[in-house]
Length: 518
Image 1 (cartoon, one colour):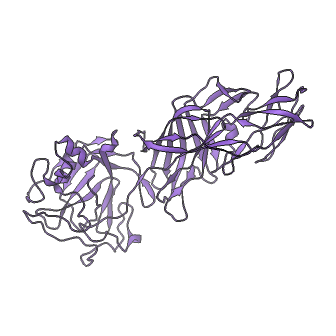
Image 2 (image 1 turned 45 degrees about the vertical axis):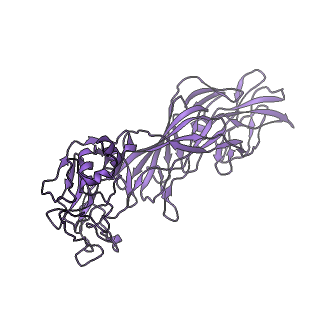
Image 3 (image 1 turned 180 degrees about the vertical axis):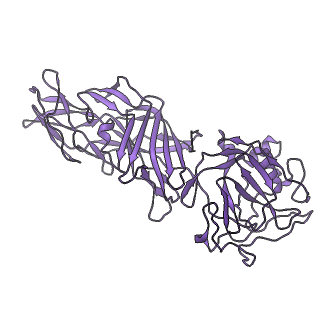
């Protein structure tokens, strides 16, 4: 049955938010806007004196509602007694239906109630747990809490009515700006500052009155034929991104602040986590349909590693050979000294000069900055923040305070001052100090609450000749400074879960990641 429905779109503003478990908190608050127009039309269902009826699903693209199998309607007759239709809808996507209603009907008008599938009279339950079978499918509306009323008018011996829906409807279409291979949205959880589910009485005016069993949280579980994981994030034709099909949730109308959690799983890597979005206080009207922004926020890292200050990356020209699993070492196309593009820069450290890389590592932090990050950067090991590479989702990495934050906390004029000297006042770029570099084992656990003061780098391991090592357990990142004593080495950042090191142990021929000061 076609029904009139309002479409609402949502805009974003900044706000930090925290989440539990593997999580990527979208630092936005969403604010729905009042719809400019109503979309959709109406279709009629009829009942005869002594007859009954059903309910509806939604065609998202044309905003038509339809009756579905098993739907019934309820009417109070002349004796003010509720009767349910003696027949129910058969088939799916039925635009109109004749309901046979028992009872006494001598008036020209009666109020028709649709309380939802398997519900009676004016008793409505908006479910706290909802299940959607198949993308873009709304056939679960009836069991989830869809409901409505309509005034039936006698015309030609039959009562005709239009149903006005009393619930509000949310639509989610999670997307990501990079391709993913085996990742799924397994659940969508919406939490409000007031009850959005529970038991209600459906009034003749179409308003819902709560009567107990309320819940501030609704969980929607998507299910797809042939999969037990949920809805897959499928790549678009240009493989520049991915998205799921649409997901729909029924909620009680009202004014709420909403928090939406998307539960994500990569079935190949086993990574599971949540991405959280917040929506500012907004009114969700009865018979209104709301598109909820659902762009997933996971940082995508490139797959490039480098020998120190090489002109090209470690697997340049041999990308298909790149090992992506710890311990994989059966590849022979790794860089050697005969490869001028991929082999390291052999420049030697010269005391008293501005020793620096000149190719790929020239924008990396220098040895002075590395000391600041290691000793004053407040490192935090994080096993929950999700990130992607090679079309898959992973976790594990380290948060460091941004250079400007470190500078301010240590009475330096600006972030550039960290380049000039280390925390002890010595310039290790020029001084050529022979020493055992420092480390910091005062590593906190978990993402920072004030994320704007920090930046995150992943534990992406490194390459030693043809072998991939320490992926997801350690981070290795070049600096722009060659090692002061051992000529075939360069300084690098090294971290594991409980320690951050200013390292001089990596040979320049190893494949490490690049980074920049933030």
